[in-house]
Image (cartoon, rainbow, N blue to C red):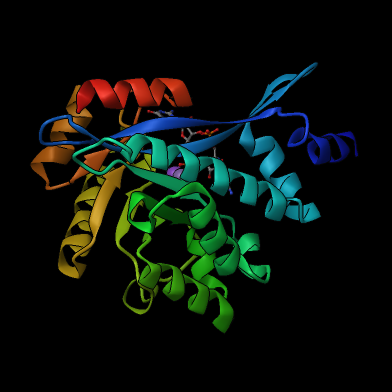
Amino acid sequence: MRLESELRRAIERGELELHYQPKVLLENGAMVGSEALLRWRHPEMGMIPPARFIPVAEDTGLIVELGRWVLREACQTATELNADSQSTHKVAINLSVKQFQSAGLVKSIAEILDETGCRAEWVEIEITESLLLDQKNETLQALCELRSMGFSIAIDDFGTGYSALNYLARFPIDTLKIDRSFINSTDRRNEELVKAILSIARCLGQSVVAEGVETAEQAAFLAANGCGSAQGFLYSKAVPKADIIALWLRSA
Ligand code: G
Ligand code: G
Ligand code: MN
Ligand code: NA
């Protein structure tokens, strides 16, 4: 398949980029971090969205090498963002289940911290609920090792997975990210679900990030119900590295 062979060369050709979407505190709008989102700038096909090529990378095993590139690049950016900064800018990195299933994930991440001068405290690892369904001991062990190295762990797209709630007590999870389908909904019942998620997180001592916040009304509702932070087009789309650094320096 053409996409696959081209994806193999995309890293060497420098066609991949990470963009960073700011994450803000709902109480005052202050930036506290960002999420690294992968972009593929193909010379002929233009921008290819991750939803098109991440599944290909996962099916072919390329996700391991691709993911390593993402980790190195995002950790390098975290080092630069935190270089002269009083407060911490936490960079969130999406990790695929396939990366956890490959041997040596933790060791490779430790090497990347070394190479880039990045501290684990500057990074949040985003996983999906499907990772927690993976019953293998190695997955839980890798998650626990990363947590004890100082990384925080977030569940992405919370509430949309095919999963059970009991994993919330079994796994070391710091943050729930409420999927944007709950936020951008005209169905009033979704507001009740958001309140219920916030209540679960409060009881378990987890922080919550609302995704896909597009309007001031959504932000006000979330703030009134105790949601800590948010991401979405109301604040900013994902921007190139130079721009997130400029935004951060200006906000600090
Ligand atoms: O940027 P966009 O909204 O199109 O991203 C869509 C999804 O692609 C994200 O929600 C995320 O789950 C996935 N994604 C983006 N960047 C990465 C990455 O670096 N690694 C992995 N595994 N998934 C990513
Ligand atoms: O990690 P995750 O799969 O949730 O990736 C977030 C995706 O959501 C990114 O691809 C990003 O482009 C998209 N996104 C970010 N903010 C908004 C928003 O406010 N509205 C919508 N519709 N999409 C968003
Ligand atoms: Mn994510
Ligand atoms: Na998400």
